Image (cartoon, rainbow, N blue to C red; front, side, top):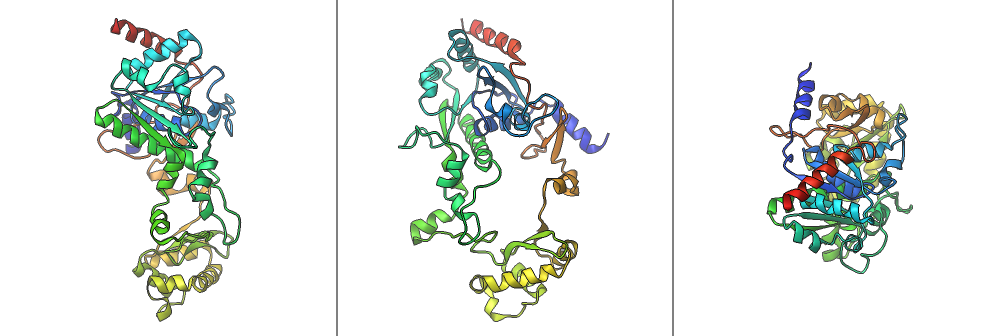
Length: 389
């Protein structure tokens, strides 16, 4: 067995640094369940509560040909035990309450007010379990004039200013071709949940899709707030780094180039034949002559294969990379060396979001069948009830 395989086996058998946490995942689709998934990856006991019929993610997108379950579900449902509960049924609602009594975290993503209508209002849950962290993931948050609107990632990408930045100058705003908002919000919610757990106080964590996306707008917020300016669409470019773009090579492949540091930018300009030009000295000079630099870079790239261009960039210690698709990622030695893609229950999927040297997490299993762990979980809920009597 290789060192990497031994380390993976050790991590899988380790309880994980969050093994003392019980998380009830009442959320659906991606963002809320993604939050619970990150906690489960590091050892939390995550109980996935699904409505009759199952989580929507089970039927979302491409399917595993072996069982017809969505590949999305295999990832977002990983490291979770499953139980089906009809929360409109008094007996099942009682089981849910008992589960929350013994839980550290509840994650939900209903529209504001739905949890309350189900008889699971935060004040009720906190009366029974004062230390419970209730993480609520919604499109717009628990307050404000938009709070009751239906919301998905697309609305957040549009309303956060993100879509307005994407696309060619003069072209249409573009939405990301992946579930960017959901994935980002899942990470934000997991982080906020652990902050709340660390606080030692039961409380509500209010996470929204639009505000999670607003976080990545960075300096564009003060840019408008202080200077009244907005960033315009520049294709693959950004206003403060020139050259920065993707360029096609003579063999029909693409190379991505960035040169944020002045020293790097000058080495790149020297490489492509624009060195020593005083007009291109400094940040302002390069920004003022963006089109000229881009045109020369495009010409230079088309005179070389991708491999030749990358080798020349590496020789001058400048940043460039081939533009990969997923086939390239699977074949890449860096990803392989980091074991960045793991195969669990026959499903290749991303490895943990971070590697901890002393207390690693692990992907222990892919998303399970609906209600697979119901008997075990119901027995545990009953034990919790008897303990409280």
